[in-house]
Image 1 (cartoon, rainbow, N blue to C red):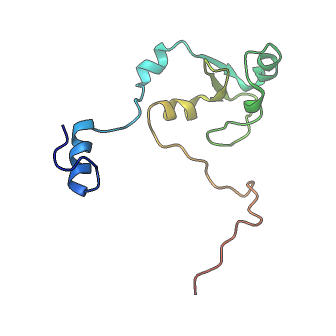
Image 2: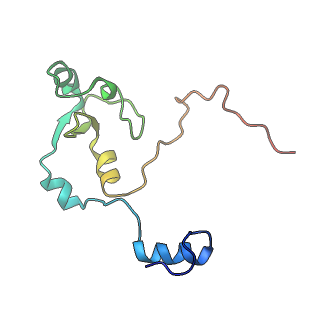
Length: 119
């Protein structure tokens, strides 16, 4: 039970609540969990067929929505139970709680995103 005021308006009360709740972090999977999951691995060249058959949603057929890179035909993709597919390595890292981010590259348009230099 949190002591003190009925409201959590003090640093001490919030800290006590945080200690009671423990670390709030989404659960992650181990590599072994992922390997045992039964989630299918397909080649990117198979994406059109999987989309036609309704086994893959249309919003993830051209690029990985984690790293934002377009698929090459020989890329390994992991097909999730929600019918989304991602690069196998990208989604495996994401499931394991490893930070995954898109690498800035010259192929990404930057028009209008420049910031002024501080004076």
